[in-house]
Length: 232
Image (cartoon, rainbow, N blue to C red; front, side):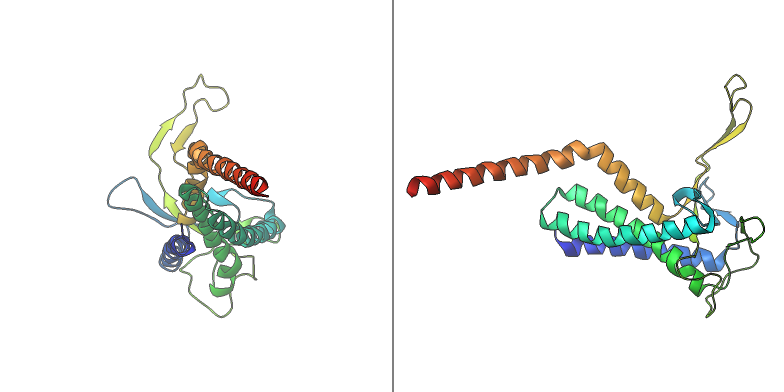
């Protein structure tokens, strides 16, 4: 698989992810939601100061550490993608790695730059340390709501497919309401999850071919050395 094909996949995912995020950020109020085509699927705007699917990590310093980790992951991912393309890994594995890379890059753009370019966003309350919401629509502005690397990731995909109540006999959660699928996420999260899950499911196929290629290459190399030895 050629590098230009992988670059196209990455660009497609990142552009689609950012286009949807920019639309939601500038057209939806925080926590505003709308059903899509009368289905259970909703566009539900939330801001995520933490990890994928709304998981939080260690307050403001944790957020900074997470953003720096994303940056390091993208830098490493750039080298790694080039390496596996050059070594001709299984095409499916390369595509999955590209999806993970594109997802990490998409969320990095939010956390690195959205605080600089938008006038409104969730910011931590000095007294409680919790992130406080805001009212109204956000707009692009010269002075943002946060500094570099402190922006929030925009999430909007919500699939509350099943609503119900746990049986009362169930330990811990008995009688409590539940909802599936509860997390709100974005296209970047979906790309990362798709890449990771696909690698886990098809890892034998992806790496069996790689192991076979390495074995064949070793045998051919040994045969070549023996031939040269015999000639000498």
